[in-house]
Length: 41
Image (tube, rainbow, N blue to C red):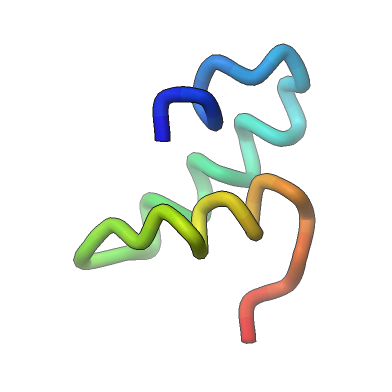
């Protein structure tokens, strides 16, 4: 998870942070997909 929030791409970091804030439990795979810009299923 740390790699998502230290990524040099600010847009990727933003997407990961937005996805995380919507979770009750952290799901690292969902965070990775969000950071990559893949829509949630």
